[in-house]
Image 1 (tube, one colour):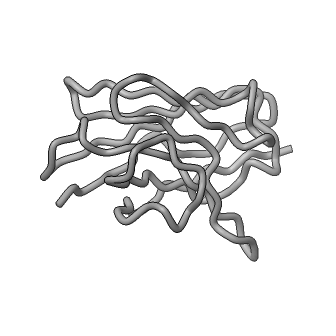
Image 2 (spheres, rainbow, N blue to C red):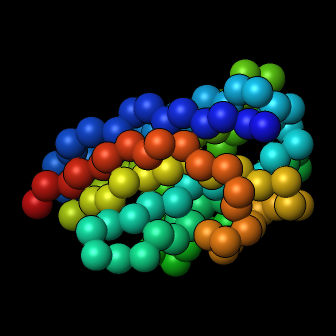
Length: 124
């Protein structure tokens, strides 16, 4: 069973950049389709970006497309989310998620493994 741990969250001004990392352990990383979810206060948790196991196929929510980039390094059991041109509405807890289903997967209920989350705060 895979365990996930995020790093790289923090406080940034609008227009700035952040890079989130997710390190996996306890499973064969390349067997899992991966994603980044986020949940803002009072809102539902949604998938903002997802990536397939090995062929690099990706999904982006419309709200982050062209600003965020998801990537993974299967040799290092690590996934990344590069976030550019950040907006105050990007403020949320971002969690690394994984699924055994063939990816990329765009729905939150398709994921069965979660990290503890990392806070991202974008000030105006």
